[in-house]
Length: 393
Image 1 (cartoon, rainbow, N blue to C red):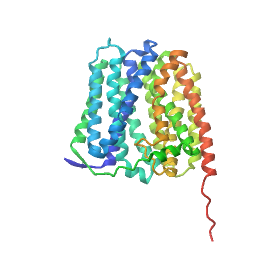
Image 2: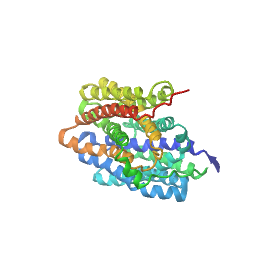
Image 3: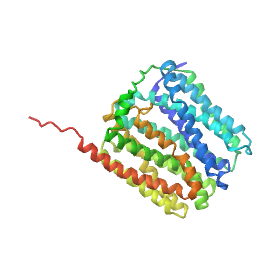
Image 4: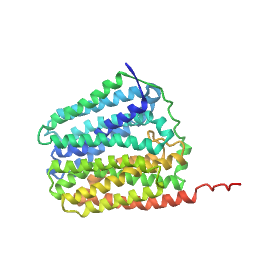
């Protein structure tokens, strides 16, 4: 048994979480949804993952205080592995709600894991919120990228159950690794009181922050979950080509977050935020109007690079003005925003059912416009409420 560094294992855990979160978007093609119009069923698959996450909120908070990080990490990894094995054993002909059960289990594990991973990063987050979230986002995106590349490269080589079995072995290895490790104790941050949470709804800055996060999370996860299906049905791409472009999206996010480590100390954060939002908006416009894969790849690059910096920059502003904010816990109005974003891929099932697959890129484009306007209002609010600098001498 060896001593584990909580921050290091928190970052490695984000890799595992990324693999799980990226899975539904790539699994749609393996389960044959690209040759049908069962959009409501697709939305329900995303909903089941989200419901599992919401169901884990209270147990995660209690178990983190009573049993610690190690227990949550082992249990979450075991649930991931169990979910993959369960889905691998399901016959293709079974109704979709059978798959919803497996995704619910994985979502429950994801909620447990997110609390543990963010808690493990608490020392880094306290020193530098933006860089800590960039590192977490890098490893999370790397996990997403690995899942997409693996499934895309083996799509015509192995059967879907075989791919799922291999994916199940990875969190199983993580569970064994965590079980053999010892974790240093980290004090659990104090969560906001009910009065503080209610007071956020009367704070213009908090409302602007939460609305921006709401639209930004929704934009990111609609594209991550629905992009392959959009490329196959709208542009006639093969499943393998669609997954390659999805991998390009995650690669752009990775490169963008890596570059952000160098840009953050050298550029004004307000300008970076506006430039990132504008790049994402431009990419969404390209994706909406393109009729070929080259245009789709170009749009994905702009979207990925644009999305890379928005959340870390916004979260850093939140951490500075709302000291109790912690990204791993349910924090009033801010968590309302992030939860709404996670539910966006589910609601997309209703929109595509009513208006067709093209709406997959229309709504993120409108959402990017909303983020752009909110970013301008947010920067104006920060400047207007900035404490005056005392005159020297």
